[in-house]
Image (tube, rainbow, N blue to C red; front, side, top):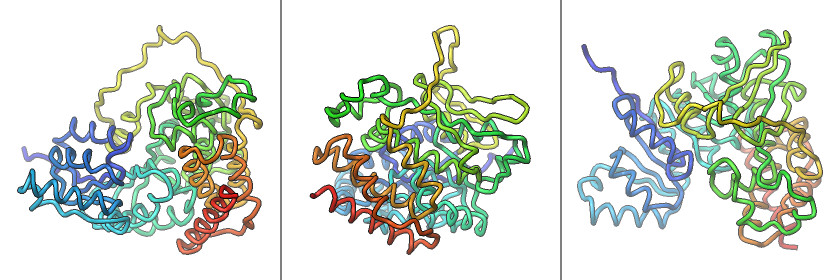
Length: 404
C-alpha cells in the first residue's frame, strides 16, 4: 500500500509559544506533516535549531539583522543546510513566504497586526489557514472571509476559546466559518470564557501599582508578554469577542463573556432548547492546534485528559467594568465597525509596548485606548489600504498621548 503524501506546513511565528507547541506536534507527527516554511521575528538562535530539526525549504526573519546573523551561522556551522535553505528578510520576506503556494496549510501564530498581511497573502493560495492570530480578524474580518471564499481557503480557529466553540457547533456550521447561521441550528448564544487574569481578586486600588513582572505572571496559561498583559486587562477577551463575531457570523447579542478562573471549560454554546455544550480540557494549546491541523480528524498529543476527581470546583462570574475597562471598550467597538476595532487593536499594541517598557502605568493602557477611540470617527473600513491607514493613524494618536 502506498504511503499517503505528507502535508506541507508553513508556520508563521515559529519561535513563540504557539510556535513551540506546533513544532512539538510537527515532530510527533513527522510521518503526516513536513515543514515547508518557518517565519519568526528576531530569535535566530531558536530558528537555527528549528532549521536543523525540520530542514525547511524556506525561512523568513522579519528582523533583518537576525536574518543576516542566521545566514552567517548556517554557512559556518551547517553549510549543507545553508545551501538548501532559502532565507528571506524583513516583513516583506515573511509575507512572500506565507503566500508562495508551497504549503497545504499555514499556521498563523504571529502576534499582533504584523500577522495580517502574511495571512491575507496565504489565503490567496487556497491553503488551509490555522488561525491563531486574533488581530487578523479584529482588523479585517469581512475582507478576510471574503478573500477566503474567493480563493477556496478553509479557515479553522486555533485560539482555545474559538476552537471550543467550533467543537460545540454542528458539522454544518463547522464547514462554513465566517458565514454561519447560528439561529438556524438553534444556537441561543456563545459563552466565551476567560480566566480573568492575575488581578481577578485583587483590590481595585492595587491596579495603580501593577508592574510588568506582575502582569505577565498568568495564573494558568503560559504565553508571551504581550498576550499575558492582554489577559490581565482582558483586552484579549475583547479581541476574542470580536474574532468570535466574525468567525461564527454572530451578532453582538449572540456572544457573552464570562469569567471562569480555572480555565477548564474553554467556552460553551447555549442552545434554544436549554442544552449547553461545553468543551473541556487542560490549558494546553497543543489540543486546539492539533485539531485545526488534523480536522476533521483528531491527532494524538502529549496533553493528558482531565482527571475530574481532582477538580475541586468550577466557578463563574460576570466581568466588572471597573476592573476590565478594555473588555467593555472592545465590545462597544465591535458594534461600531471595522475602523474602530482596528483602532482599538492598534492603540492597545502601542500602549502594551509602552507599559512593558515601563513608560506608562498599567491603568494607562485603558486610558490610551479610550483616548484613541474618542479621537477616531467610527467610519467603516474594508479595503486593506483603508485598514492600514486607520492602524497607522491610531498608533500615531496613541504615541502622541503617551509621550505627553
